[in-house]
Image (cartoon, rainbow over all chains, first blue to last red; front, top):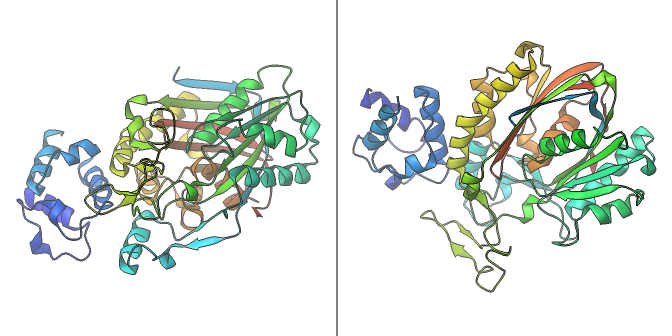
Length: 76
Length: 352
C-alpha cells in the first residue's frame, strides 16, 4: 500500500493544517486540528478509499500515520 | 431469528410533534468558540434542532402527536387495543409513562400498555412489537408512540454530542388490512458493544450520588460531562455501523425477493451526517429516494424515522409505496424493515 497516497488521503480530512505537517512518523493525535470528530472522518476515509472498516479500538491502538497505514494494509 | 415476515399488518396513519423552540447551532457558542462550533456543525450536518422547555417531557410531545392523529383520522380512543410508548426519557423511573399517557388520551382501561426502553432503533422495534401483537385476533389497533427529549440527556460542554440531538415525538396507528401485503424485518442485538453509548450513572449499577452528579473532564480534548449524562463513542459506533448495516440491508432486500429499484423511499435514521452519507454512498441510493431531516431537527433518536416521514413525505405517499427503513443505535441494536404503505395518512407536523 502506497504510504504517500495514504498520507495525502489522511491530510485531506483537515482544513487548517499545512500539508507538510503530515509525515509518515507524525503522531496524528498531536496535530493541533485533531479533535474528537477527526477520528470519524479518518474512519470514513479509510472505508471510502480502501474499503476497509476499522474499529475505534483499532484507531486507538496506533499513534503515527504510518502505523495506521500498516494497520489498514494488514486488513486487506 | 434473523429475518421476519408479516402479512396483512401495517401503518394506517402517522403524526409527529416537535417543540416550537429552536436551537440554532452556529449561535450556540456559550461553551465553545464560534469557529470550533462551525467545524462541528459542518461535520455532523445539524444546523438547527428543537428543544423542549424545562416543563415539557417526551410524553407531552407524544400526547400532542396522538391527539393530532386521532383528530385527523376520526379515531375514537376506545378503538385503541394496545399502547406502546418507546422512550429513554420517561416522565418517571416508575411507573411506565404509557399509563399516564393512556389516561390523558382517554384510552380504555381494557388495553395492554407498556414502555419500551430503546433509543434510536425504537421505531422499528416498536413496529415489530405492534405487528406481533396484531397477530392476535383480539387486537385490532395498536397506538405506537415514540418520544424523546434528548437535549436534556447530553452535556452542553461535550463537543462530540452537544450539537447533535433534538427533541420530538410521533404517533403511529398500526392495524390490519390485506392491502398492506408482506412486511419484512431484520433485527440484530449486540450486548458486546453496549459500552459504546451509555449513561453510566443513575441506574442501579452506579446509583446516583454526589459523585455521579459532578462534572468531569472526560478526554484529552477537554470535553466535560457528569456520569448521569450520556456519552457516545462516535468512532466505535461509526465502525460498527459500517461493518453491519450494508450487509443487513442487502440481506433484507434479498429476503424480500424485491428489486432494490422498486423501493420508493429509503428512510434512514440519521444519527449524524457520517452515518447517512456512508450508507447512501455504499448502497448507491438516489437523492430523490432518501429524504433527510438531519439539518433541521438533528438526531431525534427513535423519532427520526417517523418524523422524517411526516416532515418530508407528506403528499408523496398516495397509493401504494414501498418503504425501506433502517437504523443502528444504542444497545447496541439495529433493524431494517421493508413495509408497504397503503394510502398512509400523514398529518401535518405539530409544534408545541
